[in-house]
Amino acid sequence: MSRPETYYITTPIYYVNDVPHIGHAYTSLACDVLARFMRLDGREVRFLTGTDEHGQKVDKAAKAAGMDQKLFADRVSENFRALAKAMNFSNDDFIRTTEERHLRSCQHLWKVLADRGEIYLGAYAGWYAVRDEAFYGEDELATGPDGKKRAPSGAEVEWVEEPSYFFRLSAWQERLLAFYESRPDFIAPSSRRNEVLSFVKGGLTDLSVSRTSFNWGIPVPGDPKHVMYVWIDALTNYITAVGYPDTESADFRRFWPADLHMVGKDIVRFHTVYWPAMLMAAGIEPPKRVFAHGWWTIEGQKMSKSLGNVVAPQALIEQYGLDQTRYFLLREVPFGNDGDFSHRAMVNRTNGDLANDFGNLAQRVLSMIAKNCDGAVPQPGPFTAADQSLLGSARALLAKCRTEFGQQAFHRGLDAIWQVIGAANRYVDEQAPWTLKKTDPPRMATVLYVLAETVRQLALLTQPIMPDSTGRLLDQLAVPADGRTFASWGEGGALEPGTPLPKPEGVFPRFVEAESAVQGHEATSPKIEVTPKDARR
Ligand code: MSP
Image 1 (cartoon, rainbow, N blue to C red):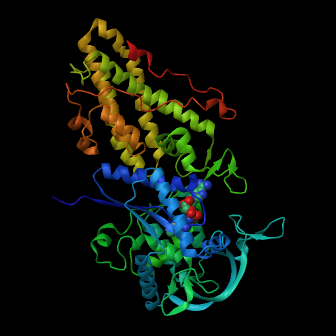
Image 2 (cartoon, helix red, strand yellow):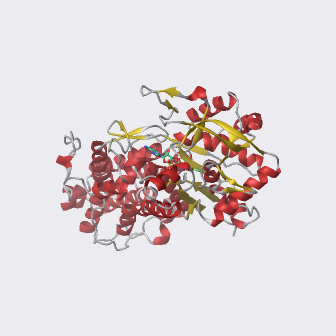
């Protein structure tokens, strides 16, 4: 048997100076959904996340906490592991840049670049923003009302003058442009691609890649007064985790180049300019794609510690549920755009899309089967045009989602799924199985079969987004563990008439309790009852 196709996906590694918030959870969630989707679709997946632990920003944070840098990093890194657990992320590896495997990998890459003449010693004199861990040209800065110079991100900059090694980035301008030209899908969405193209066309200067004014970093081989610039260290994590410097290792050969680096819009330049240039300079293939998503604001405001509006994913999970949080984040905003988080929007998605639409559909179908079909998958008779139309539209969803998720257009995939949920709810009302129960029981059995089969496919396909709830839904349809991948899509995995089903129970609860506490929230979605009316017939 031939080995499955691979899929290597990465999150940025998170700075250990901060408590995890929904912005961090968002980047990783998008990766988790793709990793799960690809596994269900038969790929051998490697999903990597981790923490970025060196550099001046972490050094300062550790000092402010009065702690040894490594102990500080150990502690904060744990918070990101805890986040991954709380969000039910299925990462296969968690890399820390303070690990031995990473030190070896970075120092090796450095030596390769130095041996190829791509790195030289000089001196840096210019502006640096510790918050962004980035160098800025004078022309990029603005002076605020307080007289302080600031980077476009709003971060304060400081003047730095020190001996530094440089990477010959300027020599890579034409080769980068040729690379972008040959790989139209390398940077997405296209607005970001245009931004990067114009930046590179504007000309590149050599990049300072070492620092001497502090020591919290990976020592430069042969010149340990220098530590590597934290971005060089950080980007290298993506190859460390697949075995670099052993480029002949099974992992490296199988998984590199990565299929997708998922990043936020703030760190596009590092991933699409510096990183491919460094890799090409070292004779390593660049990744296949970088997707930059937008940023979340909170109730219309920038999320910040000083405003005290930082949203912790754990708080959302406690309030609304894990799968509700996962669904909301990917559904609410077209992926790639900025979005605003509000409790009102969260309640609307939880109650509208999940409880009313999907939950109600599943529960009324399962309850009717439990009551009227001896608690077993009903035996269908011949299918009518209406039956075939619903089954056909459910069946078409996998191909649609392959395309949309493959382009990271989660919102479009989900929209297509919810259209079928809407169609299924309309079909229930039109077919009125509660009436058929008296007038035509065999037809009722067919209608309920069509619906159960539709719910099975909806649950299969939404597993990557809502693994827990859909798992329980598939349990209630008695779908065996080995029947839950996309290999069981369509007729091949169809429900077997006569299979006994467990007692149904709701999986998408309505958010009621704290509803009155949600500021400014009026009842925007129709109330539903916990046990739908139809189910009691
Ligand atoms: N350590 C670097 C990445 C190195 S990757 C080789 C870094 N870390 S970070 O912790 O500051 O940010 C990690 C990710 O969180 C980025 O993709 C960033 O865009 C994302 N977000 C941080 N705040 C965010 C929002 N408010 N909204 C959405 N995502 C945001 O950068």
